[in-house]
Amino acid sequence: MAAAQEHLSDDADGTQGDDGTPSPFRQAVEALRASRPRPELEIETARPPQRLAPYAYALEATVVQGGAELADGRLVLLHDPAGHDAWHGTFRLVTLVRAELEPEMAADPLLPEVCWSWLTGAFEARGVEYGEPSGTVTLAGSHYFGGLANRAPATQIEIRASWTPREGRGGVQDAGAHLAAWGELLCQIAGLPPATPGDASVVCLPQRRDPESC
Image (cartoon, rainbow, N blue to C red; front, side, top):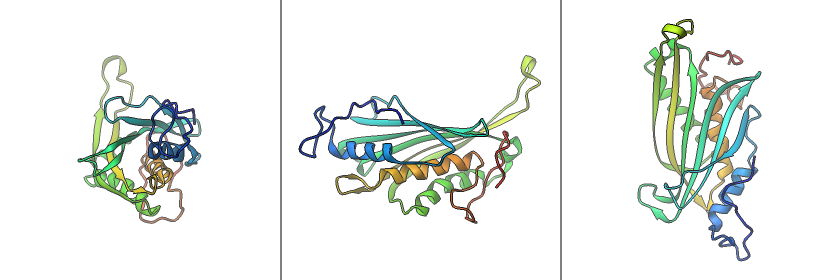
């Protein structure tokens, strides 16, 4: 991963860096940097939002297999040392993931629930503690006309979600595990099998770009 944009510096007393960055936020960012997600994920740092919280760190990821980009997403870690009533904590993770599907998949009335269950299921599989989850699952279809009429109809699925990671001693409890769970969601929405073979609770989606079958 590329270097963070927050210019985090080493602290002398374990509470705050030379640039005023709180130690819990520093530790959470360092845990994200040290995480080793699935090999299909290409991850890099991104410019974080400026007004959602006093401190923010952002990552962007793409699922790549066989030279094809199957899905992409963004994960943002927010931190407000004073706490936030809506978060019920001082940290919040916010994400957007999206991928293209075969158009007929959009007709499945259970698809939104299945996609949302991937996120919560990934947390549970790793023993990741979280609270106050919220989000949306959106399906959008595109039909092409005129000079684009030769393109097949396309359906995109998009998941927007946020949750509060449970905080351990000194900061977020295992921020790297949250990143791993998010990476699993991204791979599943891309149509890849789960990282743990034989997980019968996971349903894989067929994709337009022909990933490996489940």
